[in-house]
Image (cartoon, rainbow, N blue to C red; front, side, top):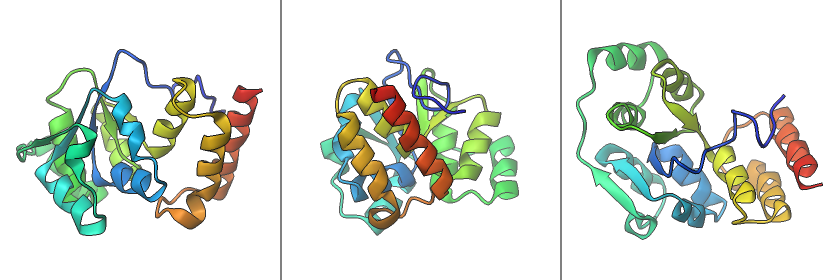
Amino acid sequence: MMTLNGDYVEMTESISAVVCDAGSIIHLDELNQLSLFRDFSTIFVTQTVKQEVEKHRSIDLSQLSTEIIPEPVVDSQLSTWATTFCLHAGEQSALSYACTKKNVIFLTDDAAARFVAGQMKLRVYGTIGVLLRAVRRGLKSSNEIKSCLESIPHRSTLHIRANLLNQVIEELEKYHN
């Protein structure tokens, strides 16, 4: 069972830098929640991820304290994982960069990228984790995030099973009460 304080959604305060692929940035923008990135000290974005974001959304990444990173070299192990799990170029570059950093969170909403990140021993979270973190850290109220979560199916391109989304909302309500 997933809880707000469980490993699945908790991001420790000591880790305040993130490496993003395009998905989390795009989805938080669709939900009008880009401001939640201000809670992180640094948001590392590779050139490929920046181009993917700009292809889909009109976002000024400089407003998010982003550090645009030149393309990292993808090592052979990651290249094998990428081929096996059909990872896009942005996911590959973000994963590659995340592996070079200590104490960062890798943000992705892609299931295959999450799996590969786990195999690479990275801390990995996604849009839902960022939203729930905002409640835990007092940046947003439970009601604000509940409303945001409920809007995902019609305001966002984030693909999440309805029963999982409902479970997250139920856990949020339990946490609030």
